[in-house]
Length: 79
Image 1 (cartoon, rainbow, N blue to C red):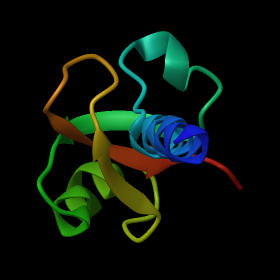
Image 2: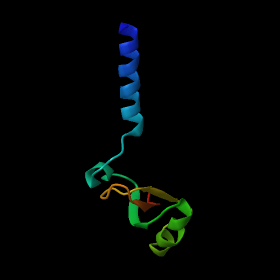
Image 3: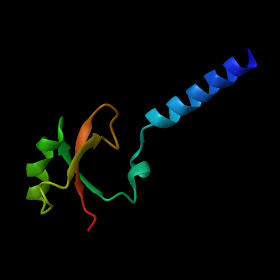
Image 4: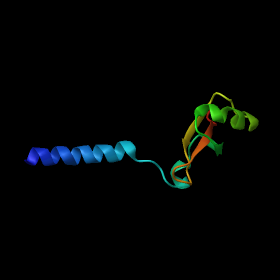
């Protein structure tokens, strides 16, 4: 019985760590992203990022740092 409880607690902690997402802009400070425009896929970010002078291939579509549920383009700024 004790081993079942330990297993359950371990799985709960693991799931919290794996599925945790930043919810505030402060969590993204220091990141190598310049956030711009909404997106659904990575391909949606090529034009907005290239318009800002970044590589159209160094992009990600990530959860918004300010609004839960929305996704925004991350133009990667690292060299």
